[in-house]
Amino acid sequence: MDKKINEDLATRNLKKTQRLVLTGLLFAIAMVLSVVESSFPPIMAAVPGVKMGLSNIAVMYALFFLNKRQAYTIAILKAGFVFLTRGAASSLLSLCGGLLSLTIMAILMIVFKKRISYLILSIFGAVFHNIGQLIAISFIFTSVYIWAYLPVLLFSGILAGIATSILLRFILPALQRVGLK
Figure 1 (cartoon, rainbow, N blue to C red):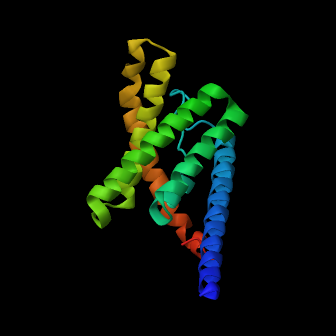
Figure 2 (cartoon, one colour):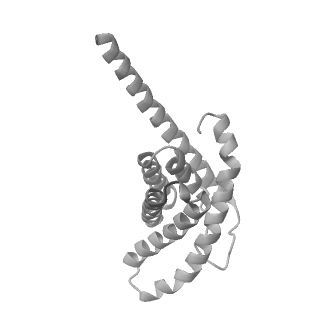
Figure 3 (cartoon, rainbow, N blue to C red):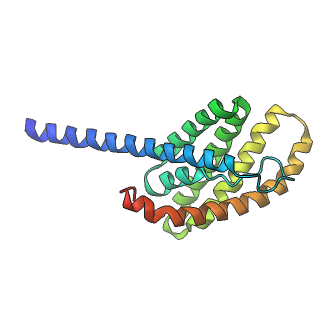
């Protein structure tokens, strides 16, 4: 009986360790993607703040193939990384956008189960990431004119969602080779 209990504890500890390592690895991937993306010239120089959101690929991967808790952990860690590299305002935008985006994607996954594609989830995630950021910035700058930027953010969110979905599909084989899927 004691041997069985010890084996169960060892298995649980190994699974916790594996989850921790996978979360750390995905967070590292998110940081690298963030640094890589920041080295690109602005995609739309005339449109401030519009980015592809490459680091969100790691968060989406965690949500789609691991679990919600790991995805939320990575999103929060990403906001901490943004705080250290870009400051408090950028970190707040990252946190609000990331949490709203994840929540919407998780709800859609629960409601539609296997009937919703990664592309649609990615588009909704990107659009709601932008909406979450807009909500956060509206608390910083109380001008109602900030909401005039919403159409630009919706359009750029659709494009970013398509791009991140395609990139996620592209890197899935590499993640499978290292045992992440």
